[in-house]
Image 1 (cartoon, rainbow, N blue to C red):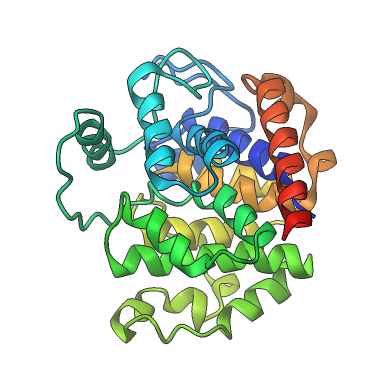
Image 2 (image 1 turned 120 degrees about the vertical axis):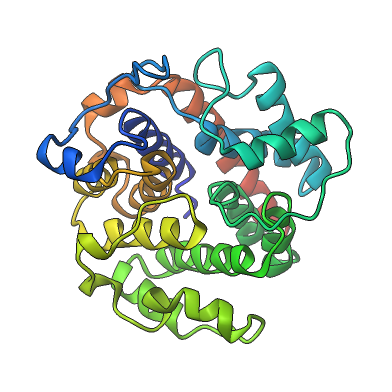
Length: 307
């Protein structure tokens, strides 16, 4: 049911693949596609290293296992990633945008955080362990928790709506095991808590047919709408794990975060046996990720029995 390992490994692989092509020009990548995990020589990041996008999942799992949904503890663990490189794949912390870095710096220095209007994608992968927790603990209000975790980095309606969309798409994948049905159900959910202006920003997912879009119409920036669109587009347009991640790696732009989300979706959907062995062999700290996944799945099973 939980497919924790599949989701985390998928996220980490998409993250690591995207590190080497992050911010490169799309036209260049389409002519010279990257098909394996390479190092990012410019940033000094070795092949197979995963960034903030995966570390934030691991740090959140560590917090939930000890404290349930205590957001002070969750953000405290993320600060440990930022300050002492805990939960990192290598001995450095990387892969987070400047605005979110400032927020973490403020928290680590016990400074007041200003209400932020960031429309970046820094709060998206953290949703995964919280979704699984709320699916196991029926007493928890999923929408309330989505808002709580998103507002830590992105205190605005657009970001909360994006988190709600991605969360429900993931839940639909679990419930249907059919990505086309999952997308159809997503379109028919109740979005009355959001303004029409915000919903219109997600028109191509909620009303239009994202499958009809051409690559030229897909934007791969760290703007939250672009990230969710491009991740779902790559996932929907591909028929296997490998192709979906090759697509994200060669989009250009924020390939690390887009790859992380697409990898998470693809891992859940296609399963661990469809992840290329050479990618798993290159991935940093694979055994550590598997251990964390197994521990969390065991925790979720116990939680589910208790509820």
